[in-house]
Length: 217
Image 1: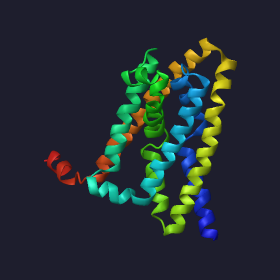
Image 2 (image 1 turned 60 degrees about the vertical axis):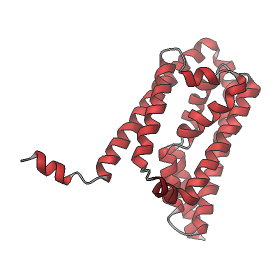
Image 3 (image 1 turned 120 degrees about the vertical axis):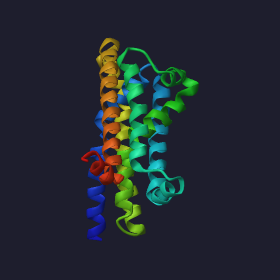
Image 4 (image 1 turned 180 degrees about the horizontal axis):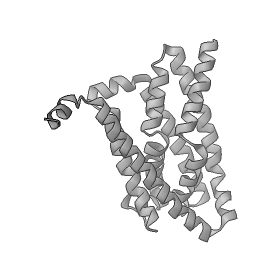
């Protein structure tokens, strides 16, 4: 029992560090600022639920799924980094990417909940890697403990998201616009960091010793 408690606490802290609810709330406000309050709540619920389902799938069959399609975690980091950086770049310019423009319509808000909110912002490569590491550490007990820890964090993140509209009302439209651009910069940096981490992990994953030895000749 003590081992599962330790796993739960460690997993929660790991998830919290990777999926920072406070920082992600600022990103959520920046992405959904033009939507009605009811639509924002819908997007928040859909994003959190989608993120939980994604992490649950990877906790249960993540390694097998990666092996089946020949996917590596560095590749996931590289692709996710490019996606996040592009969205952040368009937010930084004061405009929207085509993905973001389509999602500003309430009827298409569910797409925003899936991407980029659910993946790769909430259930990104770091979150997936954390879930896979803790769930693979033991049997069914570790999988359940990992999912419970992530579910608690999802509830906390949801509460933060739901308070985002009130925060926008306090700040005002001008400051929200500034925050949106700032979040664009942060998203661009996050995407770049994810991409660089993917390059680093890919370098460690593959055997570069023969190439290095050849370059020294």
